[in-house]
Image 1 (cartoon, rainbow, N blue to C red):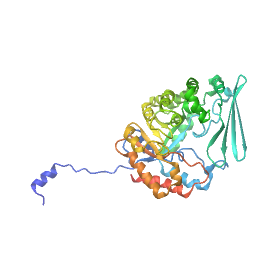
Image 2 (image 1 turned 135 degrees about the horizontal axis):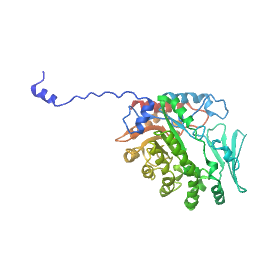
Image 3 (image 1 turned 90 degrees about the vertical axis):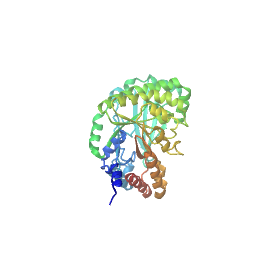
Image 4 (image 1 turned 90 degrees about the horizontal axis):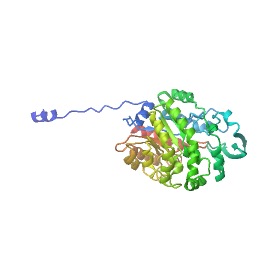
Length: 408
């Protein structure tokens, strides 16, 4: 029996029953994460796998995803990850290069396109011409690898810059495909969310040069560099303004700021170029209640203040050292209340690390990404495999990401 004193002591306390949080749908989990709300567990994304629209049944010999070893990984992503489907308002798929969606009637006097195959590769040449002067770029896609290399950049000399600036803006006008985005969102249902993908003016300009040439150009020809970014800004800003109005409240990914990061360029140029030309994109999206995720590989320690200062909602992929230069725990402590953090799992670790060691790596990322107070964390690789074959180790390590996220 209890004493009277003991009964009085117990009466001073309220017994709290801990009720487990119900399991969220994948869409609910991602939506809550973006809004800084409590979730049942951290979200897990495989980035491009489950992000890109991939058809493993497409018999095209250049479709690496129709290889049998890819099917279990694609199914794993579709069935068990929190899907963040990347969609583009101006391309058939967000990860493809320009595919002719611009108004061809307005382009035909200025742009010529040629495509051919040879030596197990597909090539594309685009030629811009005005007043008897021309600019040409050539790209290559190999049969066994899902990536596109630029083997001849559009701009090779300072004189080429002026040729490009003289091109009429009308040829860059775009056909916006809002219905494609709406259909993909409907198909996803409660399995995830769409993420509208766009390059920024920095990406559009840098992609016209060899990387080493762009780095020198951005440092020494600032006036011309700004002029190129302003030219690209006109159609990119219009795209973002229209689509964010059509689809308010959605997640966007802006890629391109990584071209203005160390060791290529100093942080002060990030402020000069990215904040000036990409910042307005962030404002337009947020004005329509959207969420902005800034994509930047590599060293981000000295640009995080600018990313947060632009009003971004999220950042990816937060590569761990030595690929990056900042620890996830440090970013969480300093910027976690403002930004949702995506990433921190190196693709090289997924492909090469033993499952035992990789499990510890995943546990550490989950711990660091959810430590203390913060807006949210999504466990995600920094990139994805792009070869035709998926090894057993790679598949097992992807499974470990899901297993560990579900334990938290």
